[in-house]
Length: 167
Image (cartoon, rainbow, N blue to C red; front, side, top):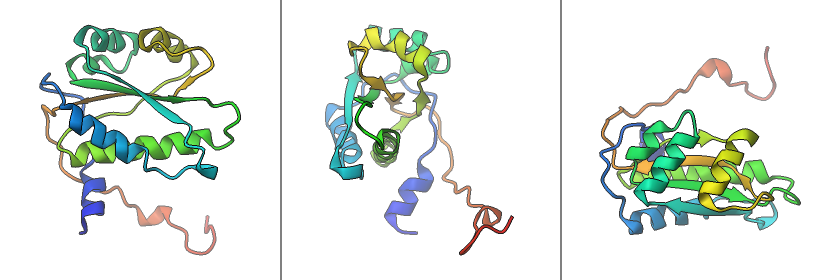
């Protein structure tokens, strides 16, 4: 298996962290990978808030009902951008977020993508200082893993249709 496929299959959702800090150079490398994502018309609608301050991480963990483990992460990354005027915003942001997650795994760290609906955005926005016209795409706790999960693929031949759908 080549390195790219190995990195993709080893990327797992990590929800247990040691609490150790995440080196800034690793966060920067992961963000470089995120910003290397494809983007429709090269609009690159993404920006990122990186939160490393412990009390701020704890506040984010309390604000999201499924991200309590963010308190033990070394950082929390919030991808965001201006959705208005960007027809393919969701696709661009998803590509950047997946690149980020794969890079984090390849750097020996762990992370989980925690989605944000409108109500959760309203709870997170004041904690990261973004104005109301910016769309918060996700909350991503990042840290030194305190759990190991085996690499996996979830390939299912029954979900593949060659040439045409074969219901």
